[in-house]
Image 1 (cartoon, rainbow over the protein chains, first blue to last red):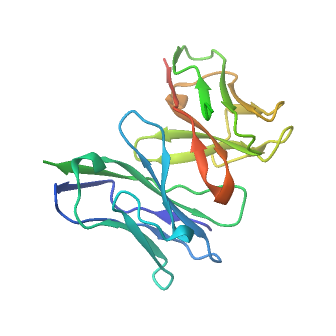
Image 2 (cartoon, each protein chain N blue to C red; image 1 turned 60 degrees about the vertical axis):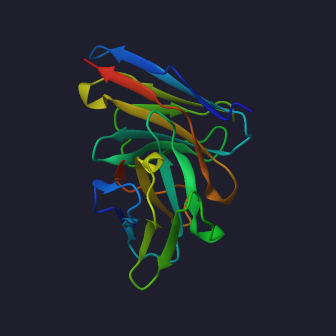
Length: 108
Length: 111
């Protein structure tokens, strides 16, 4: 079965601390991997996709095929990073599979 | 471009009432999706469509119906609302590189 796991429901850090939001996906071929973000009272939006190998707002995500993980990282968290983050693998089907999400709280 | 829009923004229903949520996109996307978002459950796919005139079931389709009569619109219907359908509903369309574009959401409360 195609599954995605985000083990942390809530992650709280202080401003300036490093952040790592975990994502593990079930092995089924080679999915494309995405992170979506939802800021308070806003719609979900794409944060980054693995295929682009880009860094958005200081976030990066490395694909580890051996561990089937796609953890989202940022070296120095900012208060404006507080949001809900969803990992979403795409398994070459018509739909994305979203994780249950991790709420990141960054305290001043 | 307005992107993806949803109507209404908020609605209160009594158990047993029916309603239709409207999603519209102006990006000429083929694929459209309806999700519900519940605390601790993440986003769960209700129904989706791969093109005008087509619909398919997602993860949690029971109690909902959909129609895609026009490419730009995707309707989600609740025939007989239940309290378990209290949720936030998001519509999305899929663009290039599998990127999904979301609407602002509809908050539904079923009493």
